[in-house]
Length: 356
Ligand code: F6P
Image 1 (cartoon, protein in one colour):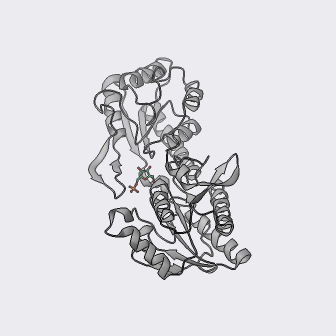
Image 2: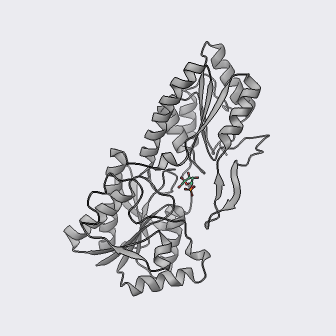
Image 3: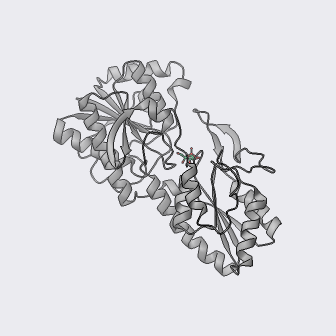
């Protein structure tokens, strides 16, 4: 078979591991031929691709980013975008296409599938919030990076008797904040699923310091929301711009939070924004294995004719699920998980709130 591949949306450690696994198994087991479309859907629209040979995927397993590069191009927002994708797939004699991406990229894959393209999806996002799968690759690496940062922030917070507010990625879901916060011993964890009351956050920090501690670490997801002033229940934005999928640019909550905590507690407070450092660099061993398993699953799905489907991890098995199931809902942090974590803190900052 002649198979196309692309990576779309925000990059994610492990993308190259997926590409490598697909190409190796495709060539060794099925004698396939591969072409990689450049920069996500932009490469399909503009018909820009590169051959993906065994040589091309040699040595890429530990590399971050993606050799195919990526973009947030949305064909549905371009004139004749979906039609141009169909023409390009036909012109390149593609028997199948493997789209590696999050809900945005996979929603385009679903549209092409509805038009008759033979598409298989692979789930990708460091936010770990894609529906239908237990884990996405890249999440573990991001958590390791944040955990290491928290260890470092701890020592400087302790040296200066400070409160440190660390802002991490997580647009709609607080998985990174929650997992890295637990692993890094945070004192307060704030996630988008549960708008928080700033007075309660300040109270809990006060309580801890009254108990004799003289520094605190707050981990906040970029998409977390104040339940009252000053954020009024909406996330903090960097600017009013939106990408082609309609996403706003989040960022800046740590600075506001630091200011409000200092005002209320009198404790010196600093903000740290980890940003794209969380997405950069080499994938963890866990993500290399998970990404490889997804890649092997996806190429088998192509040869079983399971189109319009996505490789998913369920109870540690790679299975095939409809793309529609994956893109129909975000997988946010559930109430049960939040309650378990609440038990870690002597007085949770927002214990009485119900998840949104
Ligand atoms: O891919 C998800 C994500 O990492 C979000 O957590 C974050 O809000 C967004 O991407 C940042 O996107 P960009 O790279 O376009 O700034």
